[in-house]
Image (cartoon, rainbow, N blue to C red; front, side):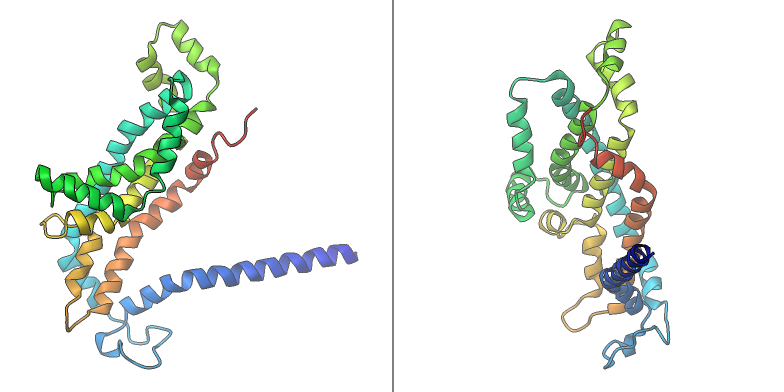
Length: 277
């Protein structure tokens, strides 16, 4: 009985600690929402209100009036990055996992090293290349740049997942006369749904939240993503904080919804290949 009570107390203590840690981590999100509803005249109030006592939706009206083109550009760049990443990463992952090309180990190491390169270093390299080619301030240039972050990650996820596909499936497809490409499209890719969702989600989120590439490669163009559109409300002598935070809230909604909807696929995708039979 004493052991049961001790176990119950520990369980409750762990629950309380978990709730407190979650509250601390989510407080910035709550404060962003609170400020987005705060009237401009109360922004410099000291101490600030912990609750929006006099809420206003002026910031959200400003978002609907000013930020929709930026949101559309971010959506276009995000979806383009997903498509390009899948087109490159899925076949590469299949080749490394099932075809075993010579030098595959070195390629895997190169992909891992590519994940360690700071984004600002890559951005400056892209700036020089895009300047020479006349590709600055273009939405598809940002798709290419964002894909360089997503593709190495995608290749590693696809390689791990496809390595765990039973060889009998691939052997049966070959017995039926399917070639390598047909086997990949008709057999391997359909059963790799979890990996496809995982790679697509992270590719979209990286492109959606990108600031370094956007600020470096598309700082003055018309097709600016939402991470730059927020500067519409920031000036030398004025900062519209409720509009800024409202923009941040609206921009966070697609990412939050996608994470909630895809969490079970992501959990399966990122753990694929971790355990071998």
